[in-house]
Length: 88
Image (cartoon, rainbow, N blue to C red; front, top):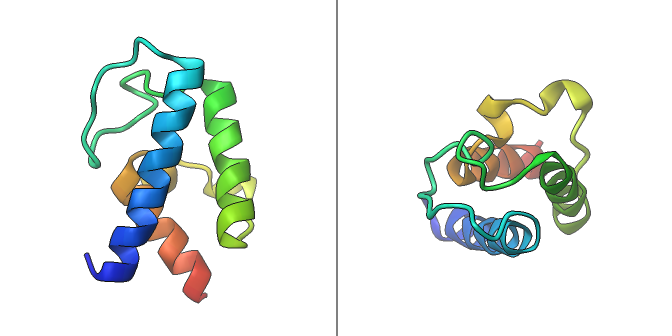
């Protein structure tokens, strides 16, 4: 990952951690490659709040059909998706 991607990943991880603490404080530790919904890191309201934050923070629109595990399942996947959307 390059420096710009690292910065994006850090912001995303910080937001996921903030949401995790607010929605699911007993959620387990996770890595940037773990699928956050499968581990119970975020619940459905947490995922929706994350999507809204991503759109506002990075100035992108995330169409419903792109809300998938492949695009938004892990910190790494979200970072790649956001980075690709920002440069598109």
